[in-house]
Length: 400
Image (cartoon, rainbow, N blue to C red; front, side, top):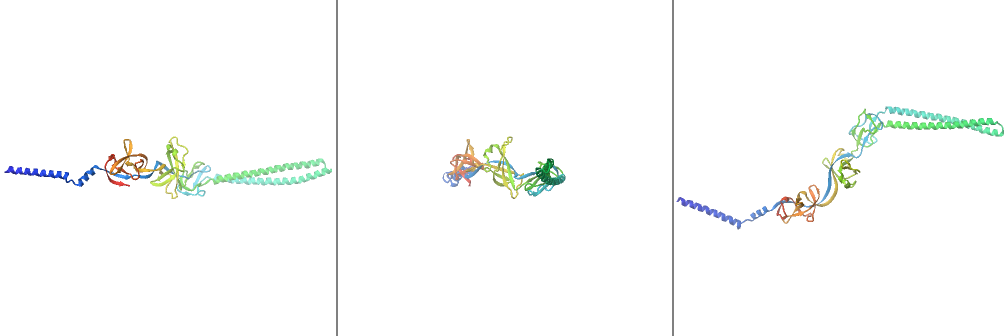
């Protein structure tokens, strides 16, 4: 009885199992839902992100570091040698050209020299007055002797005086003529002494005036290179003045770019402390290349009316060597397969391989040259490593 029940249970289990297998077979062959087919089809496709190619302006640039410098500055030194007595300005002070006093050198000895020169000029003028007075006296004597000499000649012609008397009168006349010439020479010498004394006085007065130095340009005192009490010498700067209104960007460029850079044509894009200062045409190009460093200097001028940037600051410089329009794709989309650059373009649900020639690269985009690409081309930018020609794809995101 017990064995009969066990057999019945086994038969029942077999029947249930067979029913389940039959049901599964029918579900797969006859009752298979569309969702299952869609799931399997999706499993066959490769998920990708696509981005539209676009027309862009590309630039060929050289990235450099530069320095900000004052375009206008002055290194001011004493005009005469002497001890610097006093400074009238300090670092950071603003000065005005030809108005602001900077410093003064020792003036005591020069003041004494000026006084001596003035006295010598007075003496020269007095000497001239004496010479002129003597000339007038001799001229008066000559006029009197000339009258007498002419009268004696008339009397001699009438036989009223002897030849000896006429000769004595003639000798006196000629002596006074010679004296006149000497007196005139003394006057001329005195005038020459006056001119020399006036010139020497002017020089000493200028030297005295040069003890006080005025600002040659307007700007700010950036450095004081001497202290009061130190010896000052012509040519050795005591103060530096910088004009902050005009700032120059100076950068050194590799020699290979020399022929590609033109004053007034090539532009520099300048950034200072994270701020974009804009683009400026090159205003200076060194006429020579440094033979040791193999570089040459270029400069451009930044107007700085608000004085928001200062000389001495470092600048980020991009030298724009070439600008051209072209078709661009994200740089990440470009693959190198079999020594050939390619991109995958999605069309009709499939990826198609397109060979490209690379051009310039700017900000994550690369210029590409291909007859098969245009601005409507959707280029794969994520998932492209998994693709082959004709691969089925599923677009997850489309960027335009």
